[in-house]
Structures are given as structure tokens and as C-alpha cells.
Image: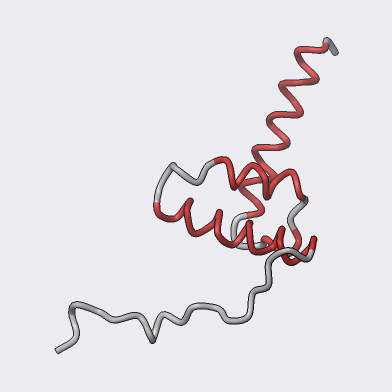
Length: 81
């Protein structure tokens, strides 16, 4: 296997790990969490995944304290009467 083939395989593994990490940030490797952070500009769901990834990185390394998860029920809705 050439160096280019090894690098391509590594990029593919990293991409798959990042996809698998979405929604399971607690068990994701650091490299996958960092990849998720790099995709923050892609869309609204990507932004939410990046927030969860950042919270997990902070929890692991002790620089972010997550005290309360946002509740959907408390979010005001413009469709309520």
C-alpha cells in the first residue's frame, strides 16, 4: 500500500468515525469530535452537533461545565395560541 493509499484510507476512517459520533458524543474519539467541530458552518443540525461535541470535549478535559440541558418544552413556539 502506498503512502497516498494509506492516507486516503485514514481520511475515510476519520470521516466514518465523525459520522458515527453524531448523537453519541460521549463515546466518540477526540479526532471525531474535532472533525464535527470543523463542520459547524454546514447547517443548523451541524451546529447542534458541534455544540454537543464541544460540551463533550470540555467535560473530558474539565474546561466546560454543562449544568443543564436545554429543554424543548421551555422553548417558546410561534404556533402556540
